[in-house]
Length: 157
Length: 105
Image 1 (cartoon, each protein chain N blue to C red):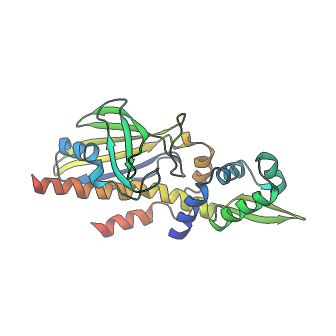
Image 2: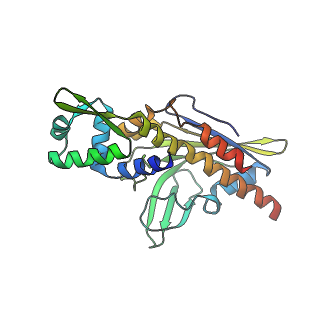
Image 3: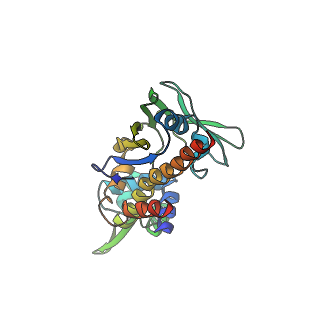
């Protein structure tokens, strides 16, 4: 697993899995509800389900325990088992995105390796989220950046 | 650190506080100056600044008889840290799930 910031508006991270790209792609997209952290949702209440509509222009959606649905991104690239990209309309505040929300972009690529698949995730155009992110970005390079997250992961494997 | 991350996210969940925070992102400002830019009273601005300060998103320094508020890199770094680590932990959970499907197969 590697982690780095190319520049202040890009987050890049990758992980190796022991399954073939087609399965890695399927788990990331169709299986997102099985691995997504339940604490990460934008609507009130509890997260009941999170899903991906498997086509370009499809919704990245979530449903809460009250049955309310919310679209928090759109599928930009649907090219199994190689590339999956979607817009990310959620700002630093994790609020429900407005109809005119401007998004950043998340691109996930699946590359075959000897042992399975390398999954690389790039979250870029973070500056699209406006001044909030612009200000937040100023903290990059100071204490509390990537290393603690890397250690957390290293402890977990 | 975790405490400040949570405080920072909660503090920025309020649209008025977010607009104040964004305003300070453009440069340090006094309470009076901030009040000119938001449709709320000066005491309300002060209250919001207090919350932002507790989350370490803004800091204050005296300048003559005034207090000048600006972005605090401590809390800002914590907020960035929070969102950066988001994908690290998400991918770790994803990898665990993907590897588990191999065992099922």
